[in-house]
Amino acid sequence: MLKTGLIVGSGRQSVALVNLLSSTKQLAALANVEIVFNSAGHGYDLDAFLAAASRSDFVFVNTDGFQLGEQAETYWGIRLFELSRKAYVEHFIYSGLDYASRNSGFDPSLYIGHYEGKARVQYLGVATGHASGLDIANAFANITAKPAQALLQTYGENFTAWWNLYKASAWNEGLIQ
Image (cartoon, rainbow, N blue to C red):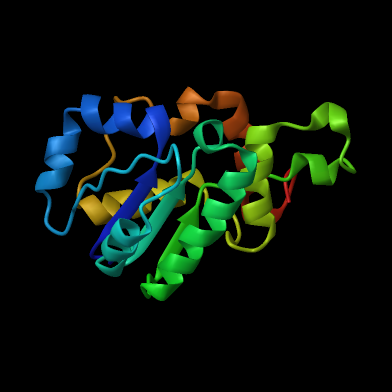
């Protein structure tokens, strides 16, 4: 079982998540959990990231292409992976996206900037294979030692159409490869 995790989110989503969820205090009270704040508007604090990653067994990174911009998101996805390697992190999970424009022959009508930054990082091999929603839920349940709360809306329920596409592509088979 993993002992410690570092979750790197950025932008409005993670700030709202940390500030508004009552479970944040409960999460912070768990053994081996540390909440680290960071603003990615101009990049990440490399020293703070490396220090936190050095105390972690796994790192989950979700960069913010809206706030960083497409080019910077590509850079930071790769750089945070490199720092995780330097910190001897056992598991690096990057929130990548399928490389739709590449898969379409770079059709300009399908170019979506905030997709491209994440997609390039994943394509370069920083991310490996798909983890199913159940895999992710089980991993977080193991870390927190608490079962998933069935009454809460899941990530999959919140983004139903996208999640269905993702599920249909698990294990790099199906629609997205």
